[in-house]
Image 1 (cartoon, rainbow, N blue to C red):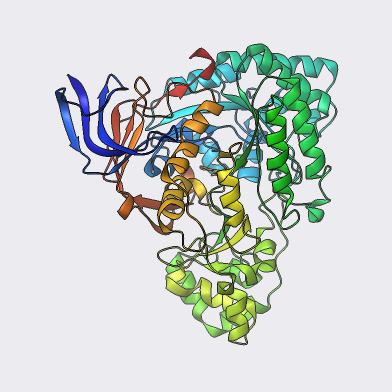
Image 2 (cartoon, rainbow, N blue to C red):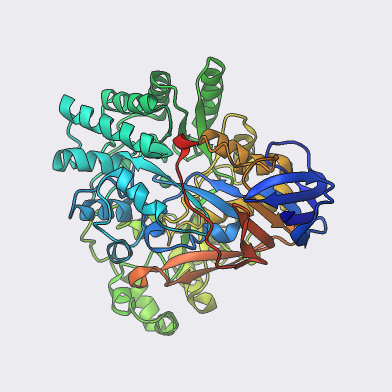
Length: 586
Ligand SMILES: [Zn+2]
């Protein structure tokens, strides 16, 4: 007797094998039968040709805080994700000395733009100190999906070296020994990886780069060697110069070329896989190609370098209720706290508009990464593209706001102002920040097809008011498999493989990632013809009233985690079969 029988699905099993029509049998949380199944089942689901895929594995998230207060883990859970990996980019919440949460919160707030008040009030500070204790705390909780945690260099250095770590001082031999010991301990306790930040653009809200940003090679080598001793874990990093030269912040210390040489040396110093953010940015429009080629070469010689790529341009959103170029104007600040509808009404008054347009920006008191976002929004106002419904993610560059301003012979700021207060203040526009230099998805196409890359970079749970790439797993099926018109599409088998088995293999999660017999029954049933994304919306549902942008999906008929149905027709069933994943114990 099966627990559940899914009849007549179009099975795309995650291995990359061609799709086939058939049934799937689930028992005790596993896929136990496949093909034409006659065995009885407690429950029969008629898929009627819907797509059956493994659950998505999102390896680049920042849910480190949210997993301590929330069990639903949205937005990921509502987009078919069944396993998340967090603790990326060198920021996390363990280890932490008693009373030492402030530095970590300020880092997470500055680097990942997660509201600090939500982290102070939402997290049960004091429930852990060491990384193994953090894992044990997470293991006591139940979620809508599985959660894997990486140890973050920033928290580790902060814990071991204190102020010296935050001041980027060189680690002493004692520091190195202690940090290495804690890395090994974390991996042995089931951390799925270790992460480090090397870009000076990632800063705490007080303006300090993440501890470890300037770590000497000797320190990084000591830490990856410690992973090796434990025999598990992925080394994840965001290299210096990934997002450009950052001249405005004093410049990056190393070029991307130098960083890639370092990555190769680190990969050779350990047997661990290395994955690192790889995007196309204006400062380095072609260097990503050298990195893909260099990784292929290194891997042919026995390496395991996995450039981590995105399935769409990384877009920064501007809207009246999130970030925009007028947010520090003197006149705007006087009405900034009004409810949206009232704020729009005020801003419609010609005298208010005139004042805001001519105002100077009020100085900011902190210097963190997000404090000057209004400057970025102002400088890039001409290049943002209004978000339509449905959203066109591969728009012609002629749709930029600057083109509209030119055609109407108006100032861009004037056009932006009217745009922001249109649709009751709910109009959104996107700046395609990375992967869109040539105004199409050709670079992304190459990145996704490359056999050495892994699909990631959703940043789910972070940049909650600026980026909404947590929906990327849904988006890529729609765009890359079904809708793309401006260039070649990608086979469904390839896109599914990249978001499932490929990521499972990287993280050593061998019990999941495909619909082969004996694997965990983590799966999605998807109505691909009708799969769609909802409108963007600002929700004030974080602890302490913090806001975030969310975007719903429709077309997920069902999602199963460990054989239990967590979603049905795009709604949460309330089931919480998700647990902490510890990879080295498998
Ligand atoms: Zn990140």
